Image (cartoon, rainbow, N blue to C red; front, side, top):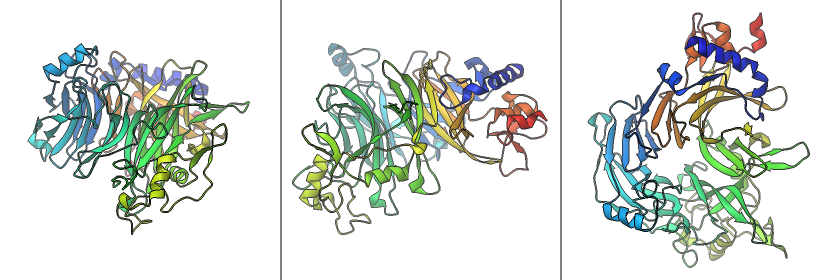
Length: 563
């Protein structure tokens, strides 16, 4: 193993020139097959069946040291220290009558007519709220997980109830969800035919609220990617719930459909309007996310198919970073890109001009007339609206404005106005992202873990370059699944220094670092440039900032090691 790893490092050095941002297929410093990764004893794999089960990691509970996973007909509770130990499983199939109805409707008996778990949310200190596709008849229930992990409690604790408005009927259609104060907010399709997309609040003692139905200004054939509650200032009433998705928009002639990456937001305390938008969001706004590259001739090539989102918290909430994976699958250009956005820039766009269609060609222009007060999209009871306690108190012109002008005029551009990682004409595409923040000897680094559609995970570090661009080095590429099944979900635990990856094959847990694989010499260790690792005088091992002074592996440039 050591000789193989060193050879891989040497190969990586030879291909160093191909690791520059924007190259098509850069070489990883170390590539480990599934068997080689197992031999390092830094990974574990778990599945409940030898057959594909469509595992989706949906919820991490670091307080109880558990990770909850939804799959076909099963909900798993796994030990995040070692997913192969103390695993708990609940078998939750669809009813036989619903399975027969599903088959009679012509749906796929294997990949459609099961109960594919798509919602796992913490409801309170002891229970999870779970929803599944229910053989194209969504169902929900509660699972008792106990108060402490040592209790090893995990069982269904209620009758099933309808999952309509909480989970998509079709398991191949994404469902995203967030639980806030025992209320469920979902982005999904609300009907059997998959034509009515909605952002919906349910499981509430208040009235249910949703997006305006069949209004393409609001949602146009969306594919939901993620949802996150993000603070906006110090007042909790000003916090917004952001939904990330991609949608298909028609051109001005109503013919060609273009895919755009979007981010929308609502106020969780929105209860709808009094006379207009009754039981509909009165705070819904959306903006376009741009991830593109500028060619030498000045043309802009867009990566519009948003695949995944990861939020990286910083010391200041307004400087929160949003990492996104984007792909492009046009007939002339294929590739993947990672763009990173600053929350301050996102807020600037949502505080900027609204989009308005005007003129004979119905072109988008900034809305330049009077904007009603309070500004559309402002939350009631917040810092800017202390005297307006509910959305039913909004003036009619505010509600009417939102209904007709939900779109912001300016798009949201990434930091540096370009991707930080770019892969074109590669034989794979990125599907998922997780990011860790590492304190190395020479500073702080963000390490990207990028899942691919060929069942591998790349560990990537982005370094400043002298060419006014960034240099993206693939430190490792790991085969985390034996049969190369595409990565469908990833969660990271910086506390445990572990990454959890799912596919239809199962779940793989892998350590964030394997310093010993880089080689037995100081030069091998430093050439790897892995911020997790450092030379301790005897071997390449994990770097701890609080320990004694050691040389970080990113501290020296390769040419400095030749002396």
